[in-house]
Length: 188
Length: 188
DNA sequence: CAAAATATGTCAACATGGCTGACATAAATG
DNA sequence: CATTTATGTCAGCCATGTTGACATATTTTG
Image 1 (cartoon, each protein chain N blue to C red):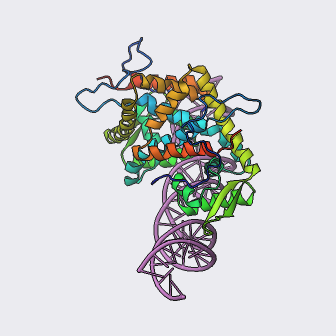
Image 2: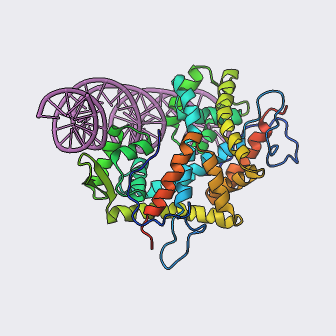
Image 3: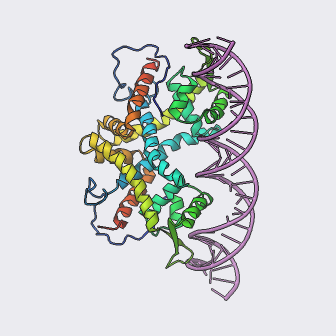
């Protein structure tokens, strides 16, 4: 987005108008005022957030779909295909397409389950881990910059806000997933 | 995502391990530890955030692309096609497809520019405004719930965090866009 | 004024990554 | 042994992004 400079008319604007509307939507008689700022900031922030990895990925002939698969396999080594489908919320056919490419190109390997030999447990290869970390590094740079610009405690605040934005019935599962993956990470 | 319950092994986990890793990535010798929690929470939060509108849109035969167009036209009445292309960062061919459907079905109208008659200035119809507000209302419900669960000041904290996550060179433009659209909104 | 630049639209072709439906195989399970 | 489960695969469709080439109307410029 090179320069945003919309030429729409601003019909009645007090010159010294505040940069933001009322801090909280006034629950006047009708519907509450939408949180336009949060809605739009989330759009632009998320776009930039996934944009960094996208650049790297496109040079490898990969897309966002590959990123998601690689990310979650890296974070949850030994996960079942069914688990991944559940997290990504896509069909096995869609997953199959990108997973096959990642396997064929040596980023992910599948091992037969020890207990249940029908399962194909997923692991990243060193090559896959390196790419996953590279992409996470780009996103971490952005997050680090943001936290650096704002005060301390921003990490906690961001975590709480984002958690609260998740569907109530998914929230526990997501938190468990993150916590368990943190434990699964190789401890230094 | 019906139930996240990944069966990956957690190799070495202290039983009383904290729910989150170090609050700040330890800048040890090598690369800093990625902010896994923020990366994943952003993924899940954004997915749910756009999920609500998606449901409504799919019943109308529309997708996320239509939502984005309708949203920005509603927020910036009278904007030029070129402005919209700049904001959405897509090609005019991609925009043309969804825009045509929105126009044909009476959600958006195009008016010849008064000063420059080459321009096709974009406006939502009452029908378009209603849909845009309905979708924004769904997202606002989610945001309101999140802000309600957390303390006051969360709105400001979220705004600052999200703003800081935007590319430095886009940030000003985005803030200007939001501020100007707020002024353009019909003042009650 | 004629030429060039601009704003927009359109046709055609292609890529990615979703989807459904149908079917196949191997292994676990009752 | 019959059924269920975990996974894979083939075929085709859809939405939405891309490039490249042109067309048209209008404004701007030399």
